[in-house]
Every structure is written in structure tokens, then in C-alpha cells.
Image (cartoon, rainbow, N blue to C red):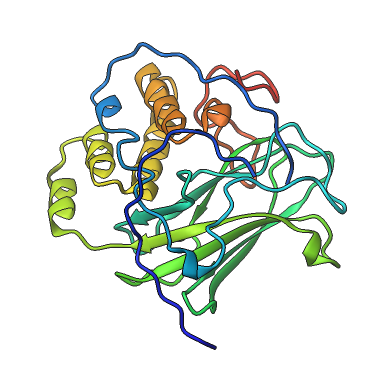
Length: 268
């Protein structure tokens, strides 16, 4: 197989919604006049990285239209990534997050991680939770191989609509690159709070790390209105405002972990 490589490149920053299981209607951007330190850095460089065109398709943040045995739902299968579908991490085993819709049938989902030569280095199949919301694929908890510094990986996350016909899968896909930054690592080491770590990750445009740190904070402090505001700012900054109020849910549970005010299947 011919080896392909790429380097994440800088592109102009744009804030908008690129659409692409399940077509979903748009919603308006929530308004917030909260002033936080994080708001000064969130979104500044999230869309500054993009794989070059010679690596094939640039990725897909939202699942395509309903087909095959996949049921129609009101919101799309969505990857929580910037509009370029690419991002960086300091972690050897980062966490990735996806919004899964509620369906009348209990579907299985599959996560696949490949290297630049399209070799599968990790795969995981999970049963969908009974409730729509944001789920986590934590490579550390799932004992996945460690990402190599400077290497680029492509991930796929699919709803398996028909196990006998995988061409009917609805999927999202994107890129992740593990980088090494002694300066940023030192700042994280000396940070005195989780909020400070989130700001360091944001300043360094480390999307996967900033998102995971904020999710952990919201799990620990589910009633913190400032965290909720920051979360909405973060997702709105990359055009994911339509799922900014979706609950965090577990694969094996419908327990709500972060959002205090939630009306079933409606995100305002």
C-alpha cells in the first residue's frame, strides 16, 4: 500500500455550521452575555488545522441522510470537532465525543482508529444508550494503543443500521494528531485548577484536550452555571450550538451527568 502522509496546515478561521445517521434541522445560536476568561480564548484557533487534500476526503462532522434500516430522527449523528474535522492533542490516549440521537431501535455503534497507511490500530463496538445525548470514546479507559507523537490518525464513528450490509452505515469521520509541546505541558503541570487547564488547552488550540477537560469539570460540578455557559460558548464557537444543551450520557446508562435543565429530546 502506498504510504500517505500529511501535515496539519493553517487555514483562515471561519465560524459557521457545516452540515453534511440522520439529517437535522438547524437551530438558532443561544445568546449569552456572560463574561469569562475562557470566552477570550475559546474558538480563536479551533479551525486553524486541516488535513491537506492529498489525504482524500476532509472528513464528515455530521452523518448523512437516512438510508437503509436507519430510522429517521430529529438530530444528526454528530462528532464534537471543529468545522475542519481535525484537531490536536497532547495525550497518548485522548477522549473523543459524539452526539448520538435517540432511536426507536437499539443500534450498535462502532469506533475505528486508523494510521496514515489506513491500517486499523483500534476498534470498539458499543450499544447505544436509550437516550439521545453526548457520549464519550475514551481511549485510555478502553486500553487502546498509545498515539505516537507527530503521527496523524483518522477516526470513524458509525451507526450500524444493518449488520449484514455495512455499506448502509451512517458515519462521521475526522483526524487527530498527537503533538508534543514542552511549554504547554509545563503550564498544565503548574496549573492550580481545572479551569486554568482548560484555558491553557484553549490557548494552545488543543481541541480534544480542552473538550475532555471541560466534560470532566461538568461531570464533577453539574450545577455550575458558569461551566454551563462556557460549554455553550465552546460548542457555539465551532458551530455546534444546536447540541450545546444536549446531556452527557453513558453508554450503559441513561443517567444525566451534567445538564440540570433538560426537556426530553428538545434542545433549546
